Length: 101
Image 1 (cartoon, rainbow, N blue to C red):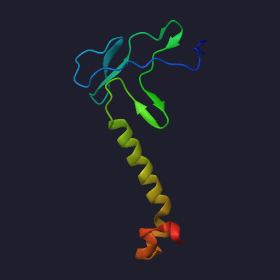
Image 2 (image 1 turned 90 degrees about the vertical axis):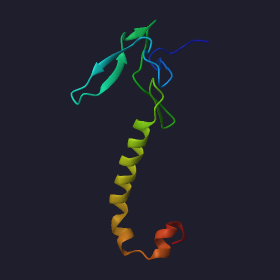
Image 3 (image 1 turned 135 degrees about the vertical axis):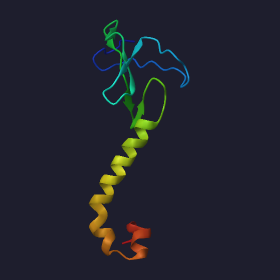
Image 4 (image 1 turned 180 degrees about the horizontal axis):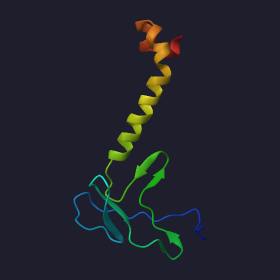
């Protein structure tokens, strides 16, 4: 099987409580948070990814879901702003099941 190196990426996974992540280094951000970034750019021509999004699910090395939850909050806030003019004037039944209208 041939591997298309331009469309592929390596994501390294470790348990959430592990102290070290192989091939990743810790960098402190401006806000004081610690972020994992790849220590090397590529292995055999295939890039190492900080995070990987597949079918809408964001995977990071520690397998935490904080980033996905914040994405859902941003998206739901956006939808609320767009739907507010409709929801403001809708009846309780229309708010409960908007697809019946």
